[in-house]
Length: 439
Image 1 (spheres, one colour):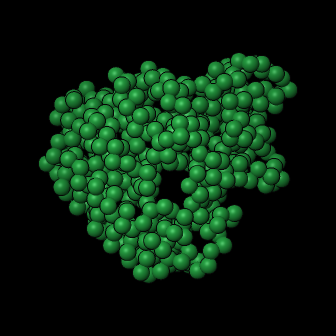
Image 2: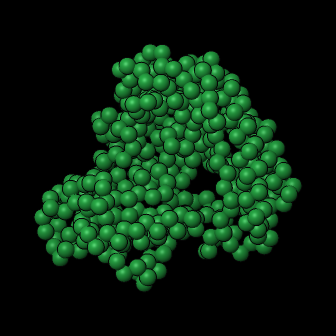
């Protein structure tokens, strides 16, 4: 087999941590000589990097596999499945989908080129027997996700991640810095730091939390403009971290804190370490900093045992603190998790009502927050340049999940460059602005 004659396409599902894995897989394949294509219709080999966090993610993954199965009538020779669905449902996939040619375990991604060669009855050798820090970005070239750890030690009762991904494992600071320098050399200007729990970083390697130390190393990279933090668990957000976010120019005034709930009753049943009082104190502390720090969070409604009183407490908390960006999810009952067997499961109908109520509250909060921004000038990065509009984003918002700023076309605007943008209006969740000048 000549790899130059084999076209490979990859479908990446699920979270941004999966995106990082997919980008590294693509780099390894290209390094082994395979052609990388974006159109799956052209591909001889199709790889599906799956998600299996909750039932709906599993269903999406299975649907994509079955859709790809139809392409074996055309150019597709091999279907390869990797990711969380393989870790969670390996035997079921083997038994029920005959069209899959290879299942790749999460810990075997560095061997994927070799495994493909074996599918064709050949041997690759040692050309790709390493995990390369370089990636083929699937995001726009000016930002990239940087996964600093894998696995999780929090063991929330609703979550399958520790079973799928294993215990929390940090990467050495030196490796992360090298990867970020390689990304910057590709044109990346915004580093989005991700892990299941960013604030836990380093405890397994260094016997102490090292997220602040890591950030202090990353800000030394001259070409980095923004560093953004995702998935900071509330109980491990230190005063030192908050102060660094507040005072360091290169660190976005943004923090993603997956609170999940605020009722002590539900937090205990979830095996979360926070309490209502500690959460309120933390949010107050962040909101009282000298610079505005945008807070994103996520909440689960309909967790087993969630009473009307628990829900009202959550509803009032969201009204009181007016968080900038909020995601609300109905509890998904996942087999194999402790919460699956908990008493007092909530009906789908009640979950739906509660989610809708929180959604409506947050919609009004976003409107009020957007009204306050009218007349202000923000430093923004250009995410897209289209014929009819330009899509901008400020440091207060993360790509794909938060508010964007739509601007009229402006001569000379380039994707990935930074501009001063005056906000003059808003439409639902998004803002309307005009480009003033390059920043």
